[in-house]
Image (cartoon, rainbow, N blue to C red; front, side, top):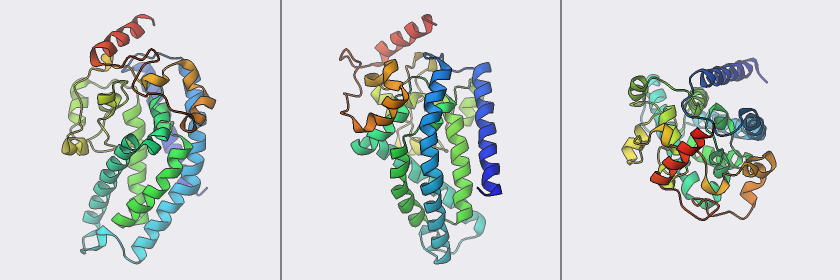
Length: 288
């Protein structure tokens, strides 16, 4: 691994640990499961995903970015633009296309099978940001080819966006309670923990919202933004996979290849609604 890559990895490890500490000091939501067991599962799942991302997705993205820069090829090269304008436009287009990729992972059944692994985590914290099935990461290679080729960004642009994207992913999944006024101001521009927490709700209409990755604008633009659910009223996860056995490492890894349950029903067949979910959230907090 090159020295620059080692530095990036160390920075993100430090940011991960920093957020983990803040979660312990200023938690946003009550935990419902043992932290250490979840951390072990999530980090093991992420190890496979990281290997594929580092060995396949990133090299493919950078190679294609190098190719499009040398030709030149892509939307950024239709009109000659100053370097700063090109960088800003590339960043916005990368973030917008990630909105569509995230949406596709929810609405296309074959993609959802793998993305579901990320959502069945019964708690939401910074470790959930790393919990992506290796199959989902592998499938994202095809998306990266289309994304980078269509936009035509340079390797430097690719690395800048990728670094911000990864940092934003850690931050928005974190269980850190920010001052409400500060978070509301921040959320005018960026995806924040409260906003993304709603995206991990067991209520289907809440999970199918808030798809943005870095900038929150895309949900506002596409009218998919939900900010109306207090964190204390959330139950995190997917109803059909809410039992402890569903989140063992083996079950998480093989989940996409099994016959899928009716996602938005509890094991007893009932569907979560906002009213019943608030009752369940209060019970889980009382049991702590």
